[in-house]
Amino acid sequence: MAIDSQEIIKLIKEKIPDADIQIDDLKGDNNHYHATIKSSMFSGLSKVQQHQLVYSALGSKMGNELHALMLTTLTI
Image (cartoon, rainbow, N blue to C red; front, side):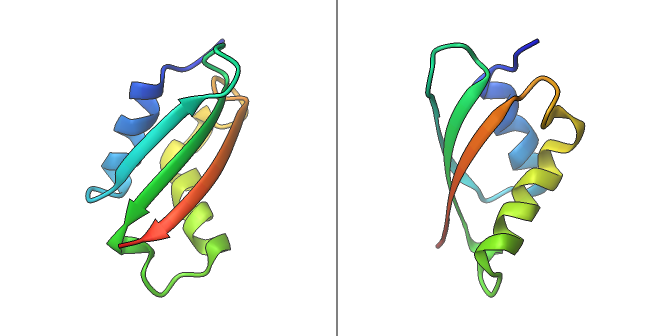
């Protein structure tokens, strides 16, 4: 089972409304992505905390419909 990049964006924006998100499908299989996410909500958070925030937005999709997600998070 795979997940569309637009669904990933929707889920992240629900938790991080000001997120500027760019997603690349690394293998063309809707299962391996790289996401660059810029948000003011990352201010004051460590990289680990930033990534945890993103993963919490994806909930149970991670490891099920979404197999692999490489993250780059930036504070704006």
